Image 1: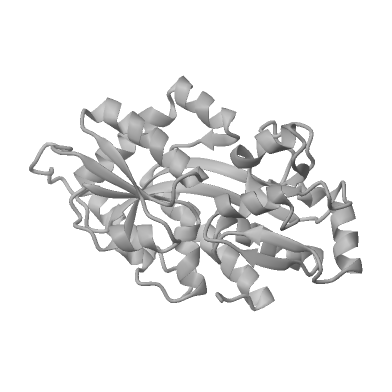
Image 2: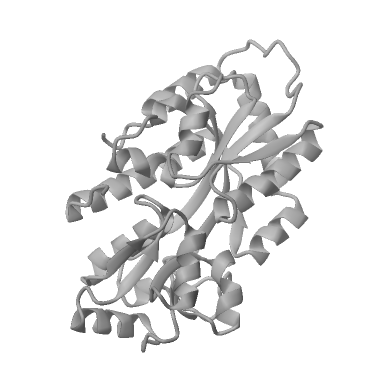
Length: 317
């Protein structure tokens, strides 16, 4: 699969932009499902804020439908009717998974609606690990290749990619311990069974403040006020960056009028001060974009992941 895998659905959307036909039925006329990942993670948080906002703005219930596993949410929406009543809120996992392994869906089954949020990861270690900086971790990992383990979600998840890119760019060998999601992974890091993790700011900040975890750096290219006082990994590993962004998608043949209404309403929700404050309190930035901007962001991120995979030979397990 190449970096142009998203072009088919983008072409469908761009062609529809010039269409003048209006959708025959008022939308929404009944409750809408927002399908997303398992409860407790950053994608679920984004989906719930969006659901609250859409419900308030559009006068119908938008209900979050959590589905565990990296492929299940996309499989559910990719094969759903294109009527605007089954939506997908998903992060980079959506377009990375088909690059790494065979999936029961293709990106051509989706049309983009809007970016929703953007977040970074924090590189944290259990306090029992005798490191206090990224350089310390690199030195210890090189001295003990394969002996230090790190926790991640499924192959293709954001924290998995953040760690694998770090390993490749820093030239270290960390042993991966796989979990079904970020929540169970973090539990074992807190317990000391696993020593290292790249975790979302919202999930780890309380544990950093209580000294249950030690924070080393952030995965953004520069220091960020979202996590004051932490340097970027790029200060020790030049060129390193790993961000997570979440978007709203619909089945590819969804009428343009529905896509346009969802996009316009998502923008209103993202621009509400209380929504921005709730995101920032969790270390996440609220976003809103045109469908075309989301499509371009997906294409660019897919190309970056493909480049890393070609350089490292990385494949799904």
